[in-house]
Length: 88
Image 1 (spheres, one colour):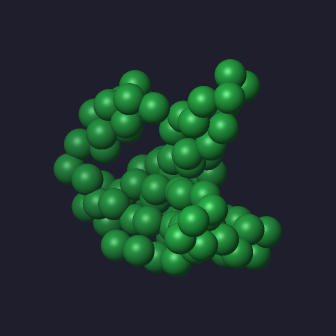
Image 2: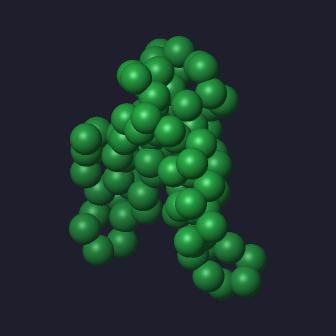
């Protein structure tokens, strides 16, 4: 689900990963030290409350209005994250 729409051409992307509605992790696609884009874990730790995740997300959007926030509810988020980070 798209939580917040950013700029279609230059907006950063954060995936808010959940498992059965409970926060699991946040992944952000960013520029690495080698100049290549890669997915990295950011934000609140697994198990944090919706209030904490929401507050963190709002702060990120306030600092970067072009930011896209996309929530994914995944049955096996550990596997999804491992594969996504490996692909880059």
